[in-house]
Image 1 (cartoon, rainbow, N blue to C red):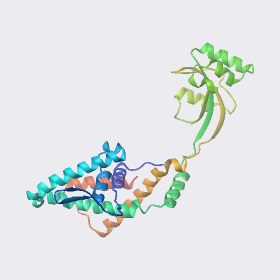
Image 2 (cartoon, one colour; image 1 turned 45 degrees about the vertical axis):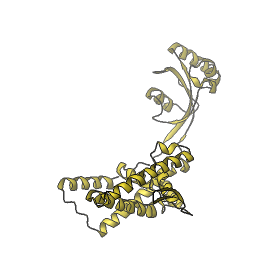
Image 3 (tube, one colour; image 1 turned 180 degrees about the horizontal axis):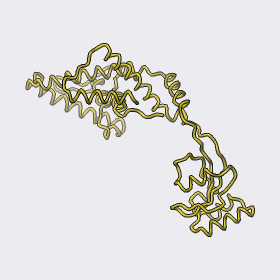
Image 4 (cartoon, helix red, strand yellow; image 1 turned 135 degrees about the vertical axis):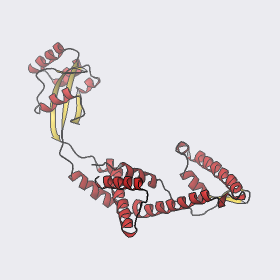
Length: 283
């Protein structure tokens, strides 16, 4: 339901990290020679801290960010004095960074900020409607070490003993205090032998022969069968939002490609690019 193409997801995640900074009063917080460090620069430095430093308390983050900003001002002024701004490699990097930031700003305005809760909810409803129906069951079990013990328990059940009481008394599973209650589960959650026996039962029935698994011997009681509910909107809202963002982003890219010709001169790169785009369209 909620699988994203890994390349597009990576792009979305990295672009979401782009953060603008709004400052009511851009006060000067420090000076390095004749250069000033303003609040807006400090906020940018905080927003772009190394992930490890980003875990620090707020005041420590500000100090770490300020320390980095001061270091940048110190060496940047030395680099400018040395004429490094005229270096062709530096200018190429700056041109690339400028284009990337424009791309990010456009993405934020037209994708991140443009997605509405109504769009996300509509996409969630569409995805849920397309989900295959899945059965889930609620079961209890009694786990013992030997087949003989399991057979004896089945005999007691046949005689009318309470499954819950027997589970509390005889089961070796940690959930014995809950009467062996395993709650609701779908296929794929339990070991195969247990799952096969449990899903084959009718509601209210228990296994008439012991079920052997790697954990021991089980006696299983099926309490209920029902159609599994889809994940709650709140639980998957961010995943669905990324789907909506992906579609908006791809639509922007396709529109831009229709307006501007893309020509890849290198043959190997062209083939790789076309293949990657083909795979994306198949998602």
